[in-house]
Image: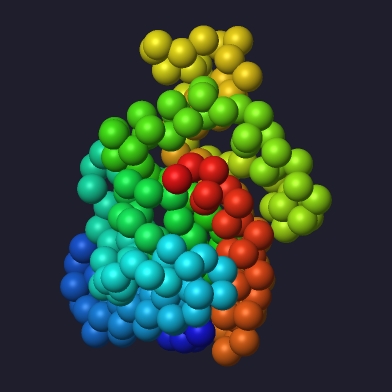
Length: 217
């Protein structure tokens, strides 16, 4: 599913995270983007096997993966460019709605369901849901199949030191309220992403993660 050249480009980009280098390797970058577009199409084409809401949604493959260039407010690490890309399968928008993703980064590949970089309105909706129904989330996380597939439970890429203003540190969902976007993830070996049969593995991961997506709808 992921082309070896895409892994090579991402690995080289990590060592040469500069605009001049990216400009010199525009063809390789464009090839990687075409690969991501193809993966997004595949995830949507098979979505009836893990989420009918995604299957019914209009596919927008070129808007279904993160951009290489990092805006200052979204920057992760010191580089101008992302060296790991998320390809999404969403019924809505990746910054507005919980959905499924495949993270492609040499040595750090994983898949699951998340809203990792929510807009401010989306983050407010996520926080409200956590406060309104902490028991519902507990039910999702305690499901044996979910626990086996996602042993780390809920994860985030950015966490605050304290709960946001307007929330209580004694709230049952306090640990999750500190998260600026959250989700679940299952780590995958790089070799699995190069396998044409990866889609079958992703379908099972996404099917298990669908309970978390439904909770946040």
